[in-house]
Image (cartoon, rainbow, N blue to C red; front, side, top):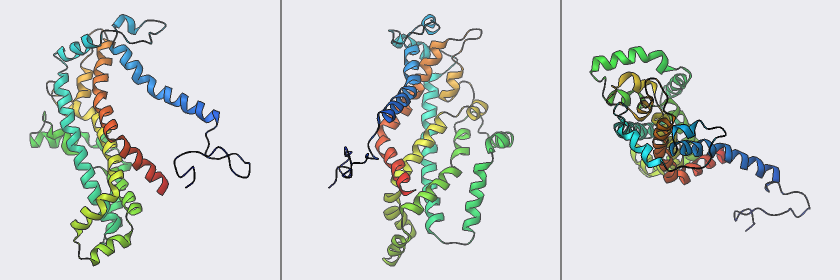
Amino acid sequence: MTAIAQGRTAPSRGDGKRDPFRATPLTKIALGITVILSIFPIYWMIIIASRTNADAVTVPPILLPGGNLGENIARVLATEDAHFLQGLVNSLIVTSTVTVSVVIISTFAGFAFARLHFRGRNLLLGSILITMMVPLQQMGIVPLYQLMVDLGWVGTLKAVILPYLLNGFGVFMMTQYTDQAVPEELVEAARVDGASTMRIWWNVILPAVRPGMAVLALQTFMLNWNEFMWPLIVLTPDNPTVQVSISFLTAAHTTDYVLIFTGTALSVLPLIVVFIAFGRQIVGGLMEGAVKA
């Protein structure tokens, strides 16, 4: 087994040429700068969340954490107009429901478009791709709101969940992933063995596309967790999502930077937990997709 196969980089090639898989000092410097630029906004958010408003506008900026984090969190939770805790719970309910729905429906649809042969398949897939090119939320926000009024759902979480239960990008992504990850001969062999369509989906498709499902789940969770405009329109101020709650943390005539940064830090925490919990599957899915591409 070679050094590369074992996950190590060989110092040089046998012919004396430079090893193409070995990182150069310039590459390491570029990666280091990229990591710092990526992490610094999160670090700065935590710094301000642990400081006072006077420290937030100090020049030069303070780069070390303070001792006011617990007090600032208590202030965020005590802000009556924000309903921050209610917003966190609502966002967890909405985002979890939408994520599960999008992943399951997209996996079903991806299997159908990639491995089932039926009349009108290309036309249906093309229709889904068209929905990705049109900003439906901006163009359809008035009729969508009118629909929620007619259903009597304004002010309820159902109005936020329903429009996002299906995602055109998710269907397209899982169609492409299924087409690459599941050979058609494997599906045909399962049919010869007498497996039903549902049995094939459960025993053949799901194990093969699990990394793609993890990537889609993270993307859907992040997009819906950060959704602001539609919840702001359709929900009441006393029943918001977390992003709407953060917008209510600003005072009438002054901006409380510490309060906003603390609320933002609390809202980012679930995303970090999700990424840590499923990071290996997500990175594995991205790498597998890159290799297959």
